[in-house]
Amino acid sequence: MNLTMRPRRNRKSSAIRSLVRETSFSVSNLIQPIFIWDREKSEAVPSMPRVMRLNVEDLLRECEALVRLGISAIAIFPAIEPHHKDIQGLHGLNPDNVLLRALRAVKEAFPELVLIADVALDPYTNHGHDGVLDAQGRIENDETVEILCKLAVVEAQAGADIVAPSDMMDGRIGAIRYALDQAGFQGTSLMSYAVKYASAYYGPFRDAVGSKLGKSALDKSTYQMDPANSREAIREVLSDVEEGADMLIVKPAGAYLDIISMVRENVVLPIAAYQASGEYAQIHAAANLGWLDYERTRDESLLAIRRAGADMIFTYFAREIAEANS
Image (cartoon, rainbow, N blue to C red; front, side):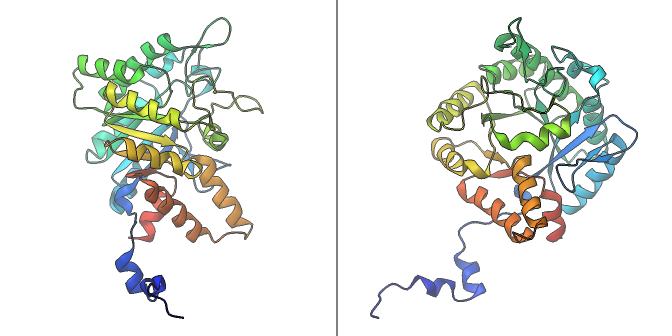
């Protein structure tokens, strides 16, 4: 064969493949999500292998290990006891709630660790939705945003370096930015879940935080995005950029690589992708059945998210990746 181009020449050895490799990821690109609760003992999350709901004492031990391994950022999600929940989620504003106590404890013990706090009401509401319901059971956008602004401020007061609204209410980014600035937290970063789909991949997460009620998944399609839509994602991110977001999140990640790529092409802000709990769980499930190579599939899934354009990745694999590279 008389071939001018032979692409295989660039693949003929591991050294050459390394030289021409276009995409990589490292521990510095990874954010570790952590679940906490206000109980005496920590407990495994059944639908998420190797993931725990930690009490505050064990959370501090976990943070010590993560810092030692080179993980620079964590995102903390609370599992709230049912008796604290109400229709508006007002326990989120209680300075003694487990999330705010955890933020204060971690920031005091590990000031160098970047703390990301979720701004949403679903951990605190007795109906599991991310907002306040009206008499007909519909989400009240503007009333919800008022509470979210207060929630963001108390999280910043407790030590959050970054607040991350995940509710998908209209106008909440501009309102939260204004509230933070008025409260003296001009330096607190605002990381918007700008593109969050009404996805089936969130099931294990809702188990972990206790926001799943009954056997059926809550329908959040009146505020989270339709999985069929892509152009709408650009509308959402451009709005959040204009309102003052510092960073953007696309969630889920693996099934939405095209969306990550589209967002990357349209904005210059840093982009995070959240490898959702269902993505994590299905890799474990298939590997446990012997259908997939666990480590190769894990690493390929993260590499694909980076290749699509994500600067950072929320992933439950973060600690084990760091351990493998330590």
